[in-house]
Length: 160
Image 1 (tube, rainbow, N blue to C red):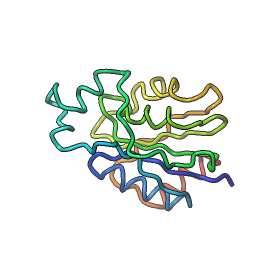
Image 2 (tube, one colour):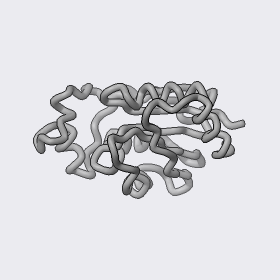
Image 3 (tube, one colour):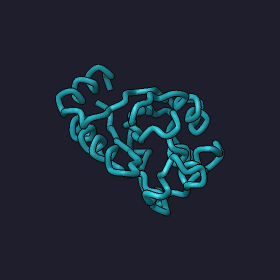
């Protein structure tokens, strides 16, 4: 069995809970992707075109700064990367995270929480943030605090 990391970004706590359950089900280490400047509720107001999240998501080259770069990616074979879906894709801080480490030869499996949309073009937008020999795949939308049993079943199906 490969060594597994669950790395996640959570703006409101929803994705954090899912990531913790996934890490427990997978017997994986857990790492929180934190922005250098935490998001406020005003920053997350998607209805305000001037809010921080709206401005970042309207600029595909936006790369919010990370609070740290201590994920030790080199220690892992498989990395689950989780996030809330914003504007039908991953928040641009996920690009920052992927571009901050060497994922060569690694398997990256995405998971997300969403208020109603799927992954959209997430894989397409994230592929350019990792090396060509990184396997990056769309995993699952994991809403509603999935049980450990359902997460273990999914992990078994992945054969990692």
